[in-house]
Amino acid sequence: MDHASPIRSCWNRNQETEAHTGSRPLVSVVMAALNPHPTYFCQAVRSILAQTLKQFELIIVEDPSPRCGQDTLAAFDDPRIRHYCNPQRTGLIHQRNQGLSLARADLVAIFDADDISEPTRLTRQFNHLCTHPDIDILGTQITVIDDCGVVKGHRLFPLDHEEVLEALPRIVPLAHSSVMFRKEAILAAGGYQHEEFPHVDDYELWSRLAVRGKRFANLPESLLRYRVHPEMGKVTRLREVICGVLHVKRRYWRERMDWRAKVRMWGEQLLLGLPSWLTFRLLLWTLYQDSKPDILHNNFVLPIRNETVTTGV
Image (cartoon, rainbow, N blue to C red; front, side, top):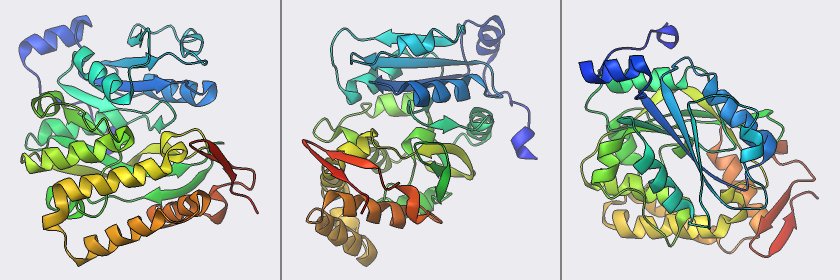
């Protein structure tokens, strides 16, 4: 099966020599970290170190917080880990762009500090991008897990470029933490932007790249376990995320919306008037197929800005 296929060659002789000597990786995995959860962070790093593709580097750009990732990383004696601790808070956008600037490979995989990559993820994406030079950005399907790692549902994304492009005015059709892309395509477009709503910087980037004619795809396999938990950014800043999504849609897609996109945008505007806990439950049930009603435990606490809302009844 393709899962077990060997890593295919798509680099020149100089790159091959560098890969053999260990001086240059085939893939740069970029992770932005802030106040990393010790258990989730450890599991995330371990999942990258266990990849079937071995010629990679893991670039971790961390902003200062009460919980430093250095203690967790001390348990991993692996020269492929490059950990950068910023002396002061820089913000998520800057961390991601900093990671891109440090990346030595032509292909960059994005990965969040609380998710888990399946062992064949890098191999499958590397091989696909090598054999499909027309694709610039490649995601995967995702499996949703809770804070304990229990599978709670799935998210299915469109597969080919035309389907992704058709979906962009309605939804975010790629899971950011599952994406591998060609670094030059992202840098040429100006990297990550959208400082006003940093937690939808991926949606803004995909929209900007689509307008520039870049091509997208998603693999049919689920190669990422996406963790939903109380500390994740899209939970703690849920209203900001919805506002950011609406801002991107007005900026890039207002004139290209069909009736489905307009109805969805109207529904998202209505979500802003609902209690935060109810909005979060509705989003989970609509986004993730086969999600179980107990995806949020009764003791799940949802902090929204300065208020804390317990979702249990």
